[in-house]
Image (cartoon, rainbow, N blue to C red):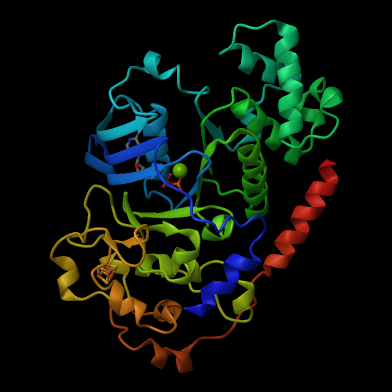
Length: 395
Ligand SMILES: Nc1ncnc2c1ncn2[C@@H]1O[C@H](COP(=O)(O)OP(=O)(O)OP(=O)(O)O)[C@@H](O)[C@H]1O
Ligand code: SF4
Ligand SMILES: [Mg+2]
């Protein structure tokens, strides 16, 4: 288990280990989203519950198709009409489920901001960056153009753009990629949102860029007290930088807890698999162990535990019903696995995934001798170095 300990500590920057009070700002309860398609109903999100307090930073992690974006789109009221949304999403005590597109406009881009991480499509090449930020501000505030321009310059400074006065007058093509990314973040947060949702696009961004984005968002949080939801495929991106992690699989939450608990003591085999597929300096020289098999079809979910077809410690009992999310340690640490205690007793759970066979590993220690050839994994220090270079380039 200690294999996971060092990772959080050596991760990029800004660990926030202290426990924060949860809840208050956003309360999501039993959220489910189905899409009716010609081929049948797609159960994209199933009974997802979580809460978020002011200043809290939540990382939502999971493979492609696990329901991360659909959950956040539901919060933003951006789902298409084909989506059937049930459950409750309360923002500052107000129910958002059932609001019209127009009613949601008071929240979207104002109290709740979403950052779509594609700087090229979010900025218009024919207007200056300052103009675009100022217009985003004027969309929600009845202020003069001069006041909006000042706010634009102030926001560019907040997201870490040097010489914001001069930069505001430039066009997007005059910005480096990293600065464009910051400008997009600035445009999203110019209205001082209470909640910022940053969603990694399907074409996964470089881990360095994602870490930079999160770093910028954490600075914004310090200034504005906003809460942040960071959505990513990569557990490595959120290591040491978020307060809580929510792991999603097959449209539902399979593990949730404080970032240190989830990294150091994962209680769901899927989380162990995710942790084994990220570069970890503590494990240099050891092979990465990706999770074998494919995520489930959301139209035709496996019976019982959704992870059972890929789980290395599956037993017959796992097929008899979907396991509930149960408390595994402190109040906040929960896992959807009936064998979490068995998992907790395994010394080196990552070895569970170092085999070609699924569902047969009861004694992972026996696998050590069979471990295949080693390959070097990228050292996180390299990521840190690239971050520094990028910061220097932007300065
Ligand atoms: N409009 C839609 N109609 C039908 N199915 C949809 C629609 N939008 C999303 N889905 C399905 O919902 C499931 C969850 O999608 P979602 O976009 O939330 O995944 P994700 O976890 O964000 O994945 P990624 O990491 O690739 O962004 C997927 O199977 C997707 O195909
Ligand atoms: S042990 Fe069973 S319940 Fe736990 S993840 Fe594996 S298949 Fe699911
Ligand atoms: Mg997505």
